[in-house]
Length: 77
Image 1 (tube, rainbow, N blue to C red):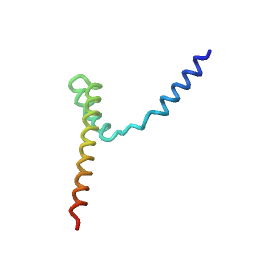
Image 2 (cartoon, rainbow, N blue to C red):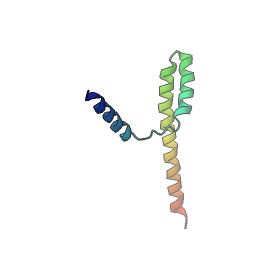
Image 3 (tube, one colour):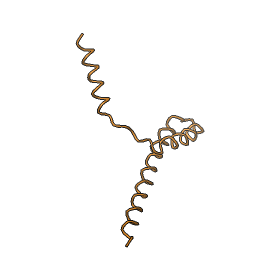
Image 4 (tube, rainbow, N blue to C red):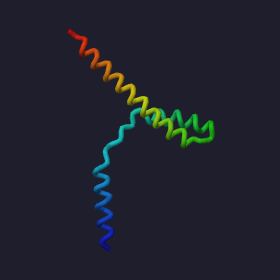
């Protein structure tokens, strides 16, 4: 009978420690990848790959944007 409170507390600790996921680029990439994967017969695999690639591209674009802002801030007199 003690297993229920232990399980509930374990789930509560796990949920409290999980951070919020950033879905930048994932949804758009998943849609495009899902359509392309569907055409090839692998819709779910295409959606997963599209999400990963879209997220990677969004992170890369954000890093480029930050880099450009830092370089412009250094050029101002």
